[in-house]
Length: 512
Image (tube, rainbow, N blue to C red):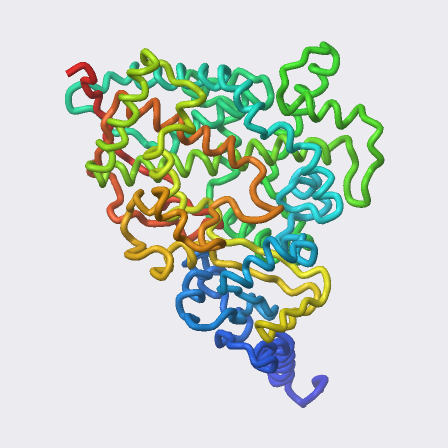
């Protein structure tokens, strides 16, 4: 005799159906959370919520959030579900300003999180929570000042020279040749960060298989497994902790721990100062700072800072550069206008790229700004309430711990703020248009105290690459160029499909 009936097969069916019903009831228990509060909600699907396409890597999270933004026009916020958990998408710019700036103390933590046991992945500015976050940011800020950028500029010019020599070696006269620009710009930014932040001579152009470049590529290679890992880190922190996922991947984490600790140790022994990030980390390690509640000034917690800066710095800047070159290739008139500005500036300095040049070319700034509008590196912002928050003017109460997401991509493509948003138009960022645009509708590096600490550094890298390339080469689409551009649905960052953009490079005669 079976446990429930006289047949084992029938018992199995009953148990299976009971388990399914229990799972169904559990995974739908929070549905109508937003509806009960009088808030518009996207209709969820059992077990997946509204997140099914993202979980199956069919749609990038930034575009999922943009779709909700577009579908809920006319309301200040809307509810949605990731699996069974209620999330809130905020779309009203005044409410966004309150969350990111005015009432930052209530939203000082991000919802996304690495595994706290993965200290290199967790104990950095992207993930660590307040009050440790505020202390670390204050300590690291001196590295990213304009004065520090000026001091590092000559080191950056060494990398510019390496890029120039590499392109010259390809013999791009005549019809030119096809180049994969995402990899080209990633090599350049990897070299800049290695040289300026850590005092390392990487030279990825001469050593394409160098470990820095090898492991850097592994971090952001969005295959099935890596895509799911990053999705969990940015949207499913409980899964991240339970599965002990590594923010930067297992092999890159081991490599970066080794190389940065060796660099730190050697510098401490030699006593040499280079005014770089390693110097700041040594000061932190040797200072009398008391360890914080969630941070110690030693070991992996300390190493988390250079590792995260390396990862975020080379990937976001190189992708922005690649997208800018792509748009210039398909918009030759804009490319010619920018090249004219660059060549005129170089003519005044006898062909030398100067630090002031990177901030004094208005059209270059407009092109980069428009690129960041269309392709923000991370197309959304997230926060988490650390206390129950009330906004009476919006008839809104947000419970403590609620994930709050803001669709940067939705705002950047909103025709109310950016007419004809699918058109690449640098004139959106001329002085008149910038003055007339409301606040908190354009923020490719975030907004408020949690805005990216490396804005200056990132923009400098991108502008240097464009200055060097466009002063000598014309970029045009080739047979392998994706037109229109396709974004990789497996990536939590905004990256081209399979992480590649092919363009034709042809040397131009600037003396004609």
